[in-house]
Image (cartoon, rainbow, N blue to C red; front, side, top):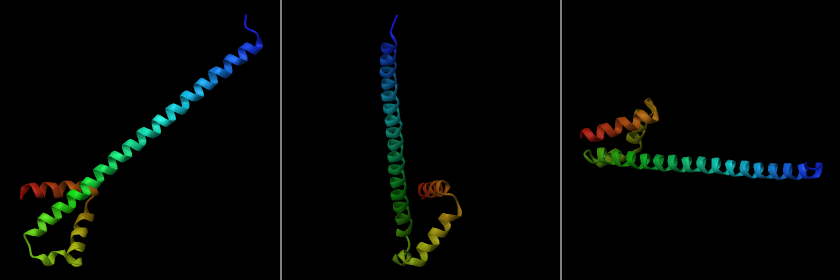
Length: 98
């Protein structure tokens, strides 16, 4: 039979172990979250770059005056009508058709 003291010692050891486990789990979760965020940020960045490229290619065919504020505002207006995702898809499909 274990004495009271021994039981308490094992209990504290177990709790310490579980606490350590919990801490590691939390760290893992945090890491996963950050990794996911990094991935999404990277994709967002690439999408933005793609958008810029597509806009540039569409504007190349017309005169250089298209880079004025007025026309960029027009572009933005058309982009904001739809949600971000659909707008991107639409631009990509339009680019592929050309």
